[in-house]
Image 1 (cartoon, rainbow, N blue to C red):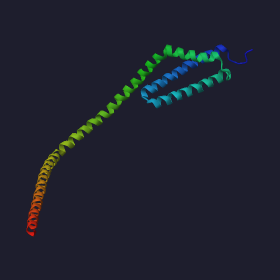
Image 2 (cartoon, one colour; image 1 turned 120 degrees about the vertical axis):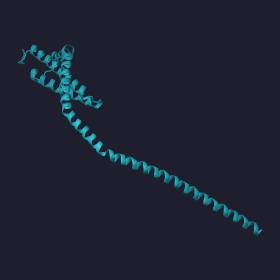
Image 3 (cartoon, one colour; image 1 turned 60 degrees about the vertical axis):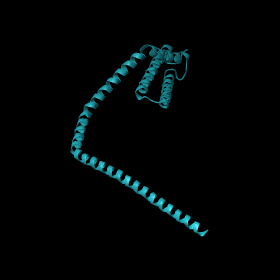
Image 4 (cartoon, rainbow, N blue to C red; image 1 turned 30 degrees about the vertical axis):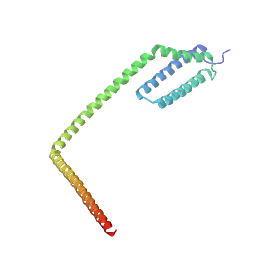
Length: 189
């Protein structure tokens, strides 16, 4: 005697539909992962979240249709539904969703460019106006820069020469002291 209000055929059909639904959710997750371009950690977290969601949905369904009795044909229904979805309609659903998402992104990109291009044009015009107004200032700046560079080189050259002259004077004085010192040594003997 069957004490459940649902027949086994009904439970099998519902579990097959649930398998198809879980496959559909997996495809949605694949789309999110494709457009999100997650790294390894993001993929691991996404996989864990998918399995948590699928376990919660599966246990709720099992509780609802068979009062928590896990039967082999219910599990096979989940598997059959998922396989039917993945080998039957999954690639078409993915292509359709990718087409829709790409079309939406293309429209958003076009609208964005329509809104941004006038702003870019105005900015370019302002930059060229500022550049033309500041051109004489730039010419003076480069002339002053060249002049300062020449003065710096000249100053560096003079400092080098003065330093060399100091060394020469110092060395000359040193030699004179040595000569005086040698003369003084010879007279004392």
